[in-house]
Amino acid sequence: MTQIYNRVALIGLGLIASSMAWGIKRGGLAVEVTGYARSAETRETSRKIGLCDQVFDSAAEAVKDADLVVLCVPVGVMGQVAAEIAPHLKAGATVSDVGSVKRQVIADVAPHLPDSVHFVPAHPLAGTEHSGPTSGFAELFDNRWSLVVPPADADRAAVDRVIAFWKGLGSNVEEMEPDHHDLVLAVTSHTPHLIAYTMVGVADDLRRVSESEVIKYSASGFRDFTRIAASDPTMWRDVFLNNKDATLEILGRFTEELFALQRAIRRGDGDHLHDYFTRTRSIRRGIIEAGQDTDAPDFGRGKAT
Ligand code: NAP
Image (cartoon, rainbow, N blue to C red):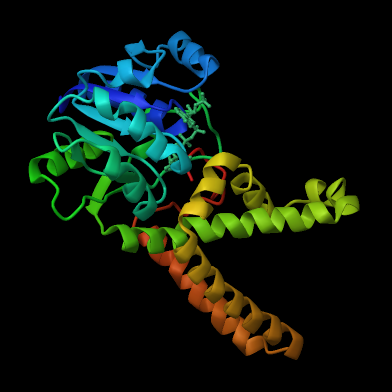
């Protein structure tokens, strides 16, 4: 048990915030956790399950006297929430976020924050397709990466405390530049989600099939796509609107590769296909060797993604 902050405020009480709340409790990382979410229903549910020590009816009350304030709302409303809390932040407090996109969030949030607070953006690379305050669990961040993306002039002590906090939640932590973060995530998360959405959409277009065979016979590939495509629509809309450049860059490359594979299939070029699949198989082995996934045959159907 390592206390890092006195009071932590979580703004937005969905999957990530609720996992953080349970993780903070598990690790004894703060004396008190306060929370706020937009809807009365979410606040009520959070109170009922004892998610925070106190759930307030306004963001202003929730952040009062907090040493760490973490914005856990969809990327598209980060700026608006920052403007709402800014006048109520304690001098010396640290503001962070968990948004899946970094450059745009920093551009949206930073201008609202007073000089008396530190801004240390972060992004835990862990999630599930579920959302809301009841979907969280303390183990979500265990052994997963969390990226901390501080501005160049960030206060070192404030950054180190945020790093210690994410380590206390079970994560491995690395620092990264915002643009590099957005490109890496476009490759590893954002574009794969878009492909899953597309594939499930294609199957749905073949409606006659989707009502029977696709569901009945869905083998691991398609079933994994449907799980990813069940992710929160608001969150993912905001990710693509706010990581436009990197996603379009990766999608362009993806389309080129897809056309090359399409041509190989048309021409019956088995060598091309075999070489390609051999290369991708070794990438999978690398991920397992790096400890980022297990070799279990139920890959993709556990809790964490
Ligand atoms: P979630 O489960 O859908 O929860 C979002 C929360 O934000 C809800 O409590 C919602 O309140 C609240 N909210 C929305 N608009 C708000 C506003 N204007 N003011 C105050 N609260 C507002 O989402 P999540 O999965 O935890 O995602 C939260 C953030 O984490 C996003 O930025 C996302 O990009 C990032 N992230 C997600 C994952 C993932 O896999 N899910 C992984 C890493 C990072 P109501 O319930 O009242 O609507």
